[in-house]
Image (cartoon, rainbow, N blue to C red):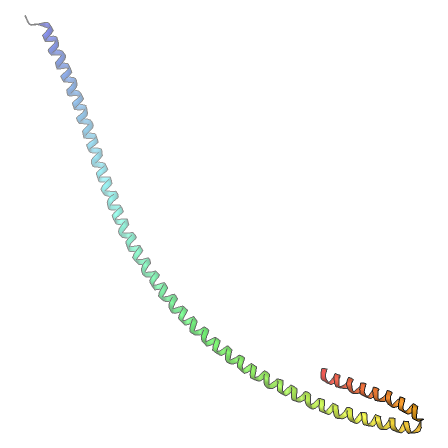
Length: 176
């Protein structure tokens, strides 16, 4: 007779073997799924890498375009600054010439005003001297008629008045 116990042990081993085969099958299925996921991830990774390479190329193109434009703008700015410096120098030269012309004209007018003022002062001086002589003559004739002390006092007063008039006229001429 066959030993039941050995048979049970063999059946149990077979069942354990079947279970192990099922587990191995499940592992293989899971490995297949992981392998598929890895393939999908590899494809996605390659897509991302390709996209990144494409983006890098685009960024390099943009960077070179921006660098080129910046160089152009710098050159244009330098050219503009040179033009503005030339215009500024021309304007400065013109302004200095105008200022020199104004200075010359101002000096000429100043000398002319001084000349006119001297002429007026000389004329007023002559008029004042004539008026003083006239007043002195009037005073001297009046002094002859009056007594000598009164004459001297009046002469002094009139002389002071004449001098005051001369001073006032001179001051008025100076301030006119």
